[in-house]
Image (cartoon, rainbow, N blue to C red; front, side):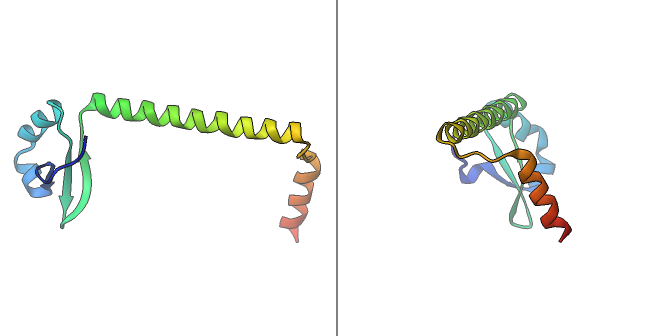
Length: 96
């Protein structure tokens, strides 16, 4: 769902018509509130916000799984380093 020109509302107009905007949002619209002509905040339904948060968590989990798979590929290919030695080397670098 894209944002159209009618979904962009000035802050002063949003303040004056908040109840009406809230009803529009509850019916499925999303509003971008501007301040001084610039995007400021968005007004979206709370269920949709929960959905967006779930999508973001799923994306993060997929990225972690992908990174774990890359790490396992590195182990299989022999691209490994001893963790203790690497940490000691980093500590020496920081101390210098």
